[in-house]
Amino acid sequence: MGFSTALSGLAAASKNLAVTGNNIANANTTGFKKSRTEFADVYAASLGGVSSITAGSGVRVSNVAQQFNQGNLNFTDNSLDLAISGEGFFSLAASPTDVNNRSYTRAGEFKLDKDGYIVNNQGQALLAYRPNGNTVADGFSTGVMQPIQINTIAGQPRATDELSIVVNLDASKAPAAVTPFDKTNVNTYTSQTSATVYDSFGTSHIFTTYFVNKGVVAGDPTWRVYHYIDGNAVTLQNGNAFGELKFDAVGNLKAPVNTTTGVVDGLFDLAPYAITPATGASDIDISKLSYFGSTQFNQKFSVNELNQNGLPAGQLTGIDIDDEGVIFARFSNGGSKTLGQVALSRFSNPQGLSKLGDTTWGQNAGSGDPVSGQPGSNNFGVIQSGSLEASNVELSKQLVNLIVAQQAYQANAKTITTENQIIQSILNI
Image (cartoon, rainbow, N blue to C red; front, side):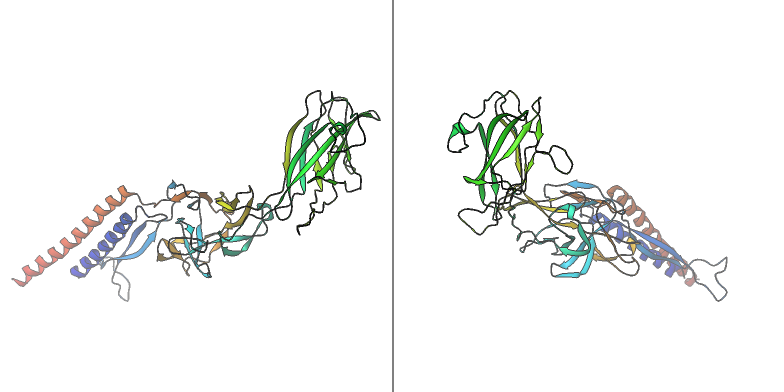
């Protein structure tokens, strides 16, 4: 009996040494979670149960339990390096084409494969929620996970439909001496400014505004504004050839006024402009031309603000991932596109997960079903881009555990030696 008891102790101590050694070996493994050896005593029970004077039959290893406490975050220069600060696992597909065979990891060393998919070192694809549109405001389909492909994305052009021009019109300028307005005759207008706008192909066009001082009309300082694209006149939606800006006695914009709210908004709705010569691109339809914030002071004409929402075609320049896991593609045209949101999963019992190697785990009956969610919500952690979660192994503690396990092994070996000496003494009588 003494030999078997000691042998169980040797086996348990050996397992403890193996677990501790594995922790030490993975002290620098990204996303690794340390394990601890859990023991249980063994008793030989009879039909009546275990007697109060029954000696134990040894020890067994009841579990090798991984400890999923947070590891330190190490910052890197790679935006595709991801770390989870808080609860949750990255969801991985076996490959970009096999999304139903899933595993889970805390190791966020991601990169692009030859086809432009975000994958880890084993070629497993990072899963993300599909975007409902091109912006974060459009939301995500949290029931649909898919791999993220990068290199097939181009910066889509966007036609200009909003233009904002904030100017100061020089109050000291006299009304135009020559009428009617003629853009080729500088004596028929007071000031002018230009902006670049884009059509549906991303082709640039020059939008020019001419300002004509009409003096005081019906008690208000009044300026007419004429609009041209590539030298061709653009009328207002109502058919008028020009719009009118009116100012109050202190030089602030007084009209145009929103007909619904009665609030000064400085907005004009231009008629669609058919591109000349025709290219096949859609008409440029600037439905919101705003002069809100413009003034008439006794200062030189100046353009204080000039903004439009169109974009030319662009090339991919980088990938950004925010703390909610939203993946953005950045383009050379200054635009961006939402590609998806990193999908996180958590389990009722993470210690019940199957250990698959390569710092990944698999679902099984002991772990419960995965609960999917978005980073930063529903008790899920946030995403740190440009960071990696270090192993949670503390080397100093593991070295102490190594000494303890070694002593336990030596003590059980001593039990066998002692038992052998006792048997030899009996046999030599």
